[in-house]
Image (tube, rainbow, N blue to C red; front, side, top):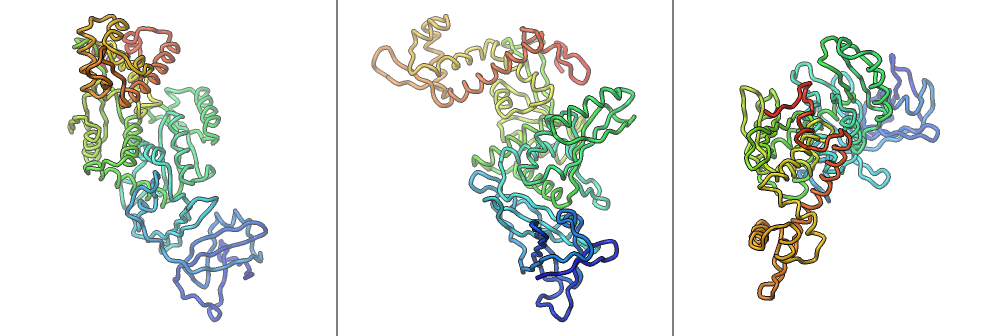
Length: 486
């Protein structure tokens, strides 16, 4: 039907005469607005005067006295699902809370767009209504896990329910982290134009010229120009992303709570493992450190540990349970507000595989530490798998000749590697006895091959070949890493 746009105070809206309406006041409806070739749908609760939000006015370029085509359709709030995963995707319908933290009901309307299922979200409060949000229902598990890990580490979380935050905020000085955070939200369905960015720097520590260079670099990488702010109280520099949308914030916070509460449960499915691995990787990038002690090294390699700092003891308890999912043995130090865990070679290779610490200084430390581990007496034979996965079969003599060890030592290594699941026997009675690598060995070789490339690249960039020497030149918070570790 055709209707006129009216001026209602300082806003625009529609007027529905009481006598002609088939809908009751307060009924949940989907209102479709059409002007020229553009169309917008919004969720409303029926009233005789319906105010149109600015986002729709601007999009349709509505003005007072415009005559537009509208239609109304009765809808119901979509039921939430209890299943977190669906066909190798995260189902966001399971993570959207029923009410906001201020106890306002969140309405969900499902629809299809470009072959995908989408959700339109809205809530109504006594002073009006919140911004409507449109997101995809099914999203990539890796990206969503990374998003939650990033926000857990570097996102702004409300601390006072009386004065809550109404926007998603993410702060980090690493531009690549902002790029990944932005891409994860765009994957959900958030439009690039919804984001605002700000660069903050301490003018006593960072010149205006350097600040301009950072802003230009950020805009080039992110395609969003940040505003620039001087702040003498700032410790250094930092970028902040923000999106003004209460429902998006509530959904992210509810997702974080859901995931944190799952760490103490015995969940072993593949999808869940992918989710928490990516969450853990980004948590370590934001709030974690890799500590290395290179002095008095037993077996010729360093002793290492990972540490996550947080002032919230509830979060520390969650991180402890999270680490236990990865067969680590974490301990909480409440006095120093962190949880820590010692790590061996297998743990470090796992951290490398999930890209823990990526984009931070700890990433280079991780790469170098793996090299020191593999050159130590206990783990030096692991590099053999890089060669052996290329052979269909091999025997004791080949191991002996290729790696310059005695036949007895070669046989013992093959036996131990078989027990560890990296190698299996193909023959028993025929001579010579033949072995081949397993899928476990092939996966290890793939990780080692990727790590080797990163190691070569790092050494070339720094111009230092010796891993221990290079490790000791890396600066952490302005201090050179010494032989005592960090």
